[in-house]
Length: 184
Image (tube, rainbow, N blue to C red; front, side, top):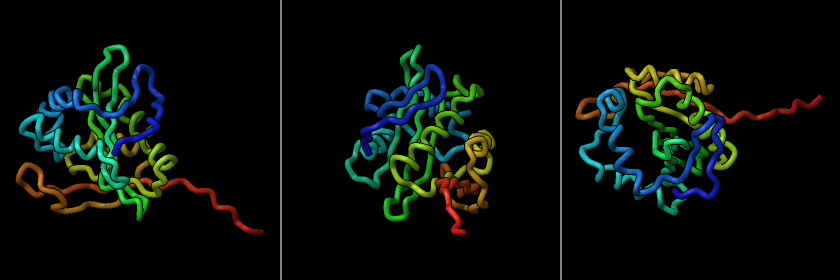
């Protein structure tokens, strides 16, 4: 889904913009690195696989996936992506997904972009639940989610097939923060 108002990130030199078709080759370049994809469900054989996803990201359907480019301002290049899929306007829920070039790991960027898009999902998209499914071997992603206030909800056994093998995924979720005024 194309978006009108891109969220702000509280991280110097990094910003979001709409993912563009020209980004697909750069995106594929780091997603095809074993240390990037091995603990995820990515299963790409060429940049054409990303083009299929990109078509959904530019859809006008309000329940279509949203994916933003994460840009290093100084280098003027794509360093990651983040967004939501499995969006349900009826249930006001979505699943967050993100990736980052390994050149940018360990710098606090992943938690910053996760916090920004989570807050934006609640405030701009009206979501009440944002969830994440993490392959049980992906401890890096789990740490990001915990830093962003997501709560572990349980293990989903054989939840998704990962490059031909059923994989166990951990479910994390964050609910919109609401103020409840108690009556005296």
